[in-house]
Length: 348
Image (cartoon, rainbow, N blue to C red; front, side, top):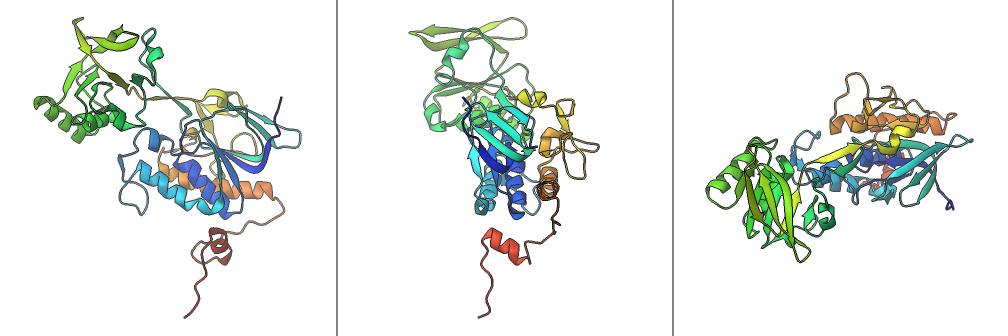
């Protein structure tokens, strides 16, 4: 049974930095938006992949973390009252006879919207799992693909798998908090910040953590709990390792998922757009940020911000074809000041 859909002018799919800035650009044009994201919190890659890593290429902000950027964007869009629908994927998008789009989600929410903005990064993120038969029974009990509550791993025998920033950062974080930390990677080369690699190797020398080169190939349980893993190196030698918890950071696998079935022009798992207004092959649907592709495309947050601005103006014209859309500046426009809730300066 189809629940009564939420009717709106705009739905944004993706709550990463570009999706959040899309809220702002639409808000300036007095277009309210609902935002849907497959992750349980806003921030996209910034929160999932590098919440505490420094970002240096946001204009006028010399350095900020992914979490700080997300929090600042949330503060910036407060005046516009966007509604968020998190931890759910868009499962279906169908254009209706009147031109609007009916959107359905995995949580059985429905939206009837005049415009759609796809800001889904590189798709819905799913963690790459450690593929051992039966291991999934321990997910979120002793096997974790994300760290949500770091304090729960204190005084534990931890095994951390992976060779990227997330694996090394958490290994360094827990080195003096856990009973023991063992980092496992399939080779003695890492795709992480050089300083983090240097610190990790220094801690290994100081015997504050250990590094094993190899892969987990088996595990043993005691009383229905994960108790021990088998690590096999490139020569086939095995080593048994007791543990309390296993943290796996093999990265997040982006999946276009249902987006691939919406009838949009797709180019190598990305959505083709024009560069005048970042509209897709279906009028009224726009794609901004890493999800889109066009000649000269650069996957940068600042590029996504630019795309969001042009897409918002294009959508305003699409929604109100008879109305001339004026470019106004937040510095001087009384109308924008009112929209933003800025109090007018009064002479003393």
